[in-house]
Image 1 (tube, rainbow, N blue to C red):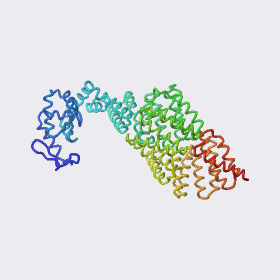
Image 2: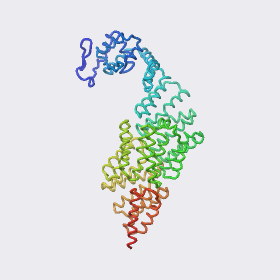
Image 3: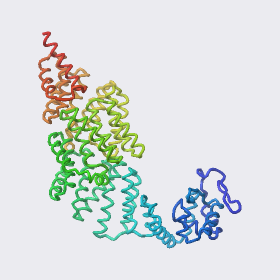
Image 4: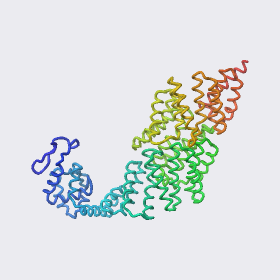
Length: 586
């Protein structure tokens, strides 16, 4: 085999990293430990401490003098069961293989193991507090093994919260779940509900960082928090629970279904009379109106939400939701302002949103701002500015191991950037990846926007029939009873009209474009209206209807007071100049 006994030690026949453990190894290790004399006890204590341990902590736990302990540790090193690593002031030891640690650990009676873990926990708390303050999971582990549930559970919660702050979401979920597992051993009571609630509340911030807002884990945990908070009659917990249920519902594309939670949040916020809770209702109402195409109502809710925001509670919001409420609101507000016809204000608001998120010092909050406020530059048709934001978000996400951001959110927006750069094949690859991964997690919101962009790219690659099928899928989702994501309707209709023009179906295209303009006017979505009017006017010019073309385009162009050098306004102005030249020539 790869391991053989030679005298008083084991010898490897190959690399330890690639060692295949024979079935008899545990028995060999146990026999070897039994021949170590007093050093066996040190190996057992070390195994309780962990895979790595210091001589300093061992001395406290074992009660041995430095000389006695040194002899036992030297015996373990000589037997090649542990390796020694020196620092300027301490000796650290590490079991050569996890199975060696397991063998030493398993050689203890369960009661002895429990006592040792309890002793280690007490010593860490009293004599090594400065070293474990930033790693409460170490204490939590020993209290768990000692059966000290009252001490272990809040430590697992603290460890989870610290991990969320570091954007170590996988660690955070693991810590929170260990705490929840221990809670199952507590008798049913109001106090148990309160403890469980304290762990479940911050858990969703970790789940969303890992899998996105539509992930089933988010919905399941939100339902549990809702049930617990209703039993506790806790207004704060109840509103946070409703926030998460709303988040899960709306990101699944169930815009209409999520409305009931908006109404409840607004009502609960009024009843509580608490500004911090009131912001939840107004923030959800802002998004609800935004996605439904009720732009002025969305703007009103934006202003109400920001008026309630207080800087001193930013960290609290980040801990519970993953982002600060100001950042959450501003990400939508800058997009809203662009759609309403203020492209320069939207650009400044997007920059301001990212600058504030950067100052928050929380990476997930910054990634949210970088990725989603960047859509303003997609609307402004500025792919380089869009890519600058996305590249930073992608770098941070990969650095933090947040696959949802770099596999879903970034590819979605990068696909639009590639489309704007005239690279349809690259756009198709990225958009399909972003859409597929998003729907795999249960996400459906914004799919009409993304599929419409995909349709444009597919049309540019020459498959206009498939492009029309994609657009019709968008329209079907928008009109679905529980969907009603009407924000994108005018733009989707415009894109359909453009594809029909490419097929030479001008009359059908004209109908779609006029419907688009009517929708944009109903929503007072000035930027959508300008785009549709420009496309329609170009079609009407081709048909020889110059006056009608001017009648559609001139009023909406003249409405704009900013953004003169953005592509949309440049194209409109160029077309109007051509119409004027034709009129003068006639």
